[in-house]
Length: 277
Image (cartoon, rainbow, N blue to C red):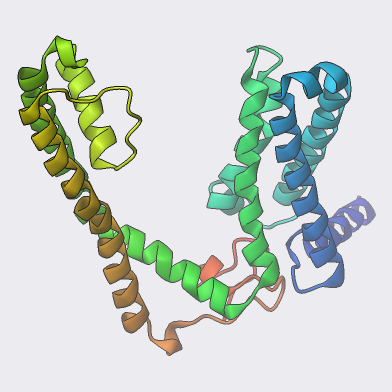
C-alpha cells in the first residue's frame, strides 16, 4: 500500500512540475502546447459559424472539438490532483475560467447550440503572461487590476449619471420629434440617445426637425467629452497605484513551482501548497 502511495505522490509531483512549473523546460513546453490548443479551439468555433465551411467539414470540426474538450477535461483534473490545496485552484480566477471553458461541449449534449460558448476559452490565453514571467508584465497587470478596483465606485456613479441623462434626453427627443421622426417610443428614443452619446451613430434613427437636430448636435458634442471620463478615471488610479506600490512589497517567486509573487498570497502558494518564507 505504501508503494502505491509513493508512486501516486511521484506522479503528482511530476505532473505538478509539468503543469505548474513554468520555470522548467517541460512546464514551458506544456504551456506553449496548451496555448496552441486553446487558439485552435477558438478558431474552430469561429469556423463553425461560417456556413459554407461548416457544411463541408462539420463532422471533422465536431470531432476536433470533442478531442480538445477531452484534453481540457483531463488537464483540469490533473491540475486539481497535482496540488496540495486543490480548492485554492478551483475557486481561483484561472480555475473558474478553466472549468467554464470545459463545460459548453458537455452542455451541448442536452442544450442545442451551447457549444458555441466554447469561445470563452479565449480567456485562457491570459496564461501567456504567466509563461512569459517577465516582472514588468506581472507588475503592470497587478497595477491595472488595482486601478480598476479602486475606480469602480467612480465608474458606477458615472454610469448611473449617464443612464439618468439618457432617460431625460430620450424623453425630450420623443416629445420634440415624435413618431414622424422615427422616435416611436421613449425606449427607442433612449436607445438613440445612448447610440449618439457613444458616438456610434448607426443612422437608423435621425431627427428631422430643426430643434431635434440642434439637440442632437449638443448630444454629439457631449459624447466626445463623456468618452474620456472613464478613461481618465482609470488612468488616474493607475498612476496612483504605480506611485504607491513600494518595491519591498514584492514577493519572490515560489521556489517550488516558480509561481510569481503577484499570483499568490504572502503565506503560501496555492499552486503547489508550499509555505513561503
